[in-house]
Image 1 (tube, rainbow, N blue to C red):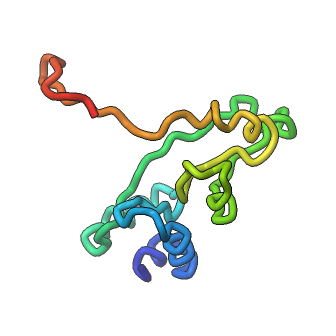
Image 2: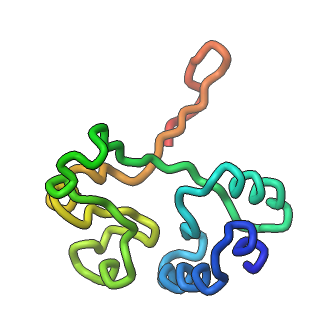
Length: 135
C-alpha cells in the first residue's frame, strides 16, 4: 500500500480509510482509491503493476457540463458518496466510490441520471458474427 500511495501522491491513511469504508462489501468488490489520475500517475502505476497485485485501473464515464459554470447554482454538482450516505435507506443500492448528485437538479434527478450498473460484453469473430452469449 505504501508503494501505491507514493506513486499516486496520496497518504497511506487515505487508502486505509477507503478500504475501511468498503468493509462489508464482498471481498472481490473494487475499491476506488483515486479518481482523475494524471497521465503521469497512470504511467507510473502501469510501470509498477507487477509489484501491485490486486490493483486495477478502471476508466469511468463522467458527466459533461457543456456550459461549464453557467447555471451551476441550479444544476448542482456530483461528488463521491460518503460513508454516512451509504448507511441511509436512500442510497442502499450504492457502493463506495459511486458518485451521486449532491445539490440542485443533480440531486433531484439522481435516480434518472445515474443509469444502471453493469456492462454488456459480446464476443464476435472477424466478420462481426456473435460467437457467444452476451453478459
